[in-house]
Length: 214
Image 1 (tube, rainbow, N blue to C red):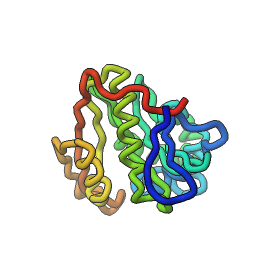
Image 2 (image 1 turned 135 degrees about the horizontal axis):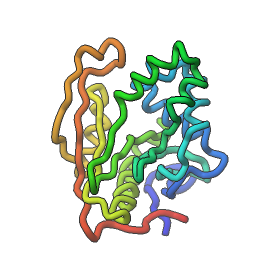
Image 3 (image 1 turned 60 degrees about the vertical axis):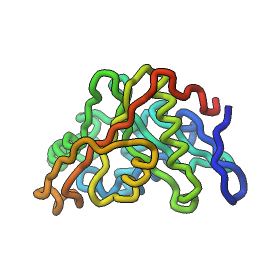
């Protein structure tokens, strides 16, 4: 069944599971646009970062928004030990070289989040700026909630940085609650943010299921 956003435009925004074949680079570009500020110190320069993300994308760990068949938004999640963005330590070293790759591995390790039992970790939402305000982020969150319910998860976890109040406001509107803030002011100069807030959303045992397009 399709799940559509209302609003003006050339057509409805439909949500589906998985990154469509052939849209991997577009997915990486959207992801980098949303999270490049945070990931930049580990994966810059941007062109190289997008190429690396494209090559190591786990297409089945995302829900996507499509407008006229084009990818305009996505939300990644971690489940079963795999997340939307992959790439082993050896892959990082091959792409960036051993000398420059080691400190990049240390930075990437700082972003790793391991789900607790019964928890699905969401990697965040990336939406094309041209269609923001049409409720796409909310659609993506609800589809991730459907995935979590189908996997019998009891909650969704996400982390939001202190310089992204717009994202936090969206999450709060979609029933996420802040449970803890980790302050790292010594990293502000390096990473561009000085605190991360952990937010949780409970998943009902009989939550929404099967709302995506095939």
